[in-house]
Length: 372
Figure (cartoon, rainbow, N blue to C red):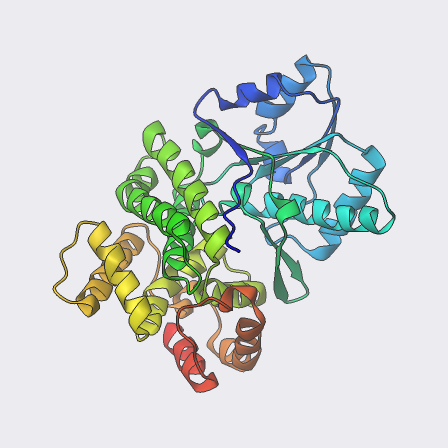
């Protein structure tokens, strides 16, 4: 039986926060990070709630790549406050942390024959993860990133407001935007595609190609900011139903070991991952379809692959993203010392299951050497 799950109501545009003025809520638990609090970004939400005399609790002890102990601490605060609404505010890390908190609280309450009824709202402040519309969360435990997936982590409401991305540094815009592109391309070439996922993925890819560099060069442009938010959202819905691939599996492992930005890792890896996967005929055909959807006119499927790679490399270069992992400051000796662990992580990452090309140990090791 096939299933395409659509749940979050998506409110977008400059007045999208007005939905908070209409929802029934008495106690709101906000999961965010200290930067959102320090810069006053959270005030865009709390000011509305205070006007309504809504009781608020803020959990802001979330760091990049949220760790299991942060999830546990958030769970304790959540249970103590007992909210009827939860709002995740931030980039992928606060939203993933919030999902992790809800995931484990619901599991515990279910085991105790208790139910947890509340409204879950996600408010992304970057255009990258698409986490506001996905069933996925990534939690770090030790030196390992653990992807989780459960329909109960899907928000009820997503709010895409361009005010939250207006002051993003260009480097963050570039990194998160290329994460969107990775999501969309991997969703399209997945070994588990469907017409929904491929249509949304192509829409996201075209939007990123048209808007990301402009957004990077001039973050004040509201149209481009809004378009990138929507592209992130479309890509998130796409990969939620078709899955991702080894671009993310490699990025998960390398990111956990060397603490580099997830989106930047994806961007650096993407050209070589595409070339690697394109040795599979079905993947090669899919990559060429993407190139044609971008209005290129390749004469062969392989030429389509090469044009797509060149288009990605050009955008990386314009945004100061390097070509190799070594250029990210990852020590050579330590990287190659960890090769076997990275390969083991890749093999056990849920994103690997639907990668379009199957591979041997020797093949993935050669790829890891090449991307370095």
